[in-house]
Image (cartoon, rainbow, N blue to C red; front, side):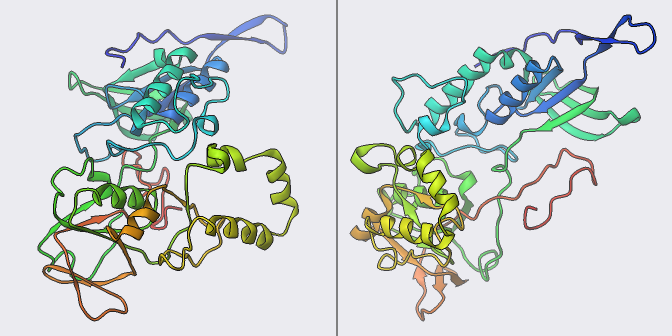
Length: 374
């Protein structure tokens, strides 16, 4: 990780020709601020450098890589993966087009390897030289003359400064602000432990506990599988179900690399949508019957993101994970599910219920996001 930021070079000058004399004048390059030094932030910096823009990137942490850099510490407004997280797409399909991953890396990388790959990309592209680590942008608002005014705090020294730039790129991701839906009895009656998946790091502390995971996205599946190895019992509550696919495809090849081909892309666009969905759903059902596992969703396979999980069917089959419907209400020591008459006893509840897309650093009116993240 970069321990100190390189000094920013002064604005470069770009030649232009005056309309009257034909003489070459010099115009200062536009000043661009990129906020966040994860995968999208580093590619944004690289794109600015390729256009000879004067770019600076502010990153609040002390490393490149965004959420892929694991930390035990839970911080408000900072995204992070579980310690055990492995990427859901293969390195072949996740790679930067101009920076192939090292052939020695596994097809599905652990988060630490993914973080290292992103950092290597930042260094090789020159983007890392423009990153100011431990610098947090606390306020962005419209400034004078069409520019943008930024307040920046140096987290190492505590010093705050002001910057004027021509453009701002927000590359802060959308896994930092947990969405916590309301459930009857959860806040005022249930006496057990409640946390959001954003706060979860390892299964330590869940040994021999009765745990409910609410949600059926990728995080929910990963949590249920990991906790099933240490907990007394894990329940997985879902309102809508999910299609579940594995990382391993035909002949042991990466699933996404097998099916995201030019031929299948052409067929997808030429064949009727319902027929494509039917063919894919039948192929996935060969792995396990989603109805029998209480996971068959109400939507078609391309209607929403599927869950990528290799181990969940085995956990359900062995009974260490039990699938339930929506929660009707929480009691003092458990939860009652819709369609059932007896509550299930619980010690812990983990809400794997997604995230709100928020930009608290922006002044009101700059970019308003609705309750539905639109």
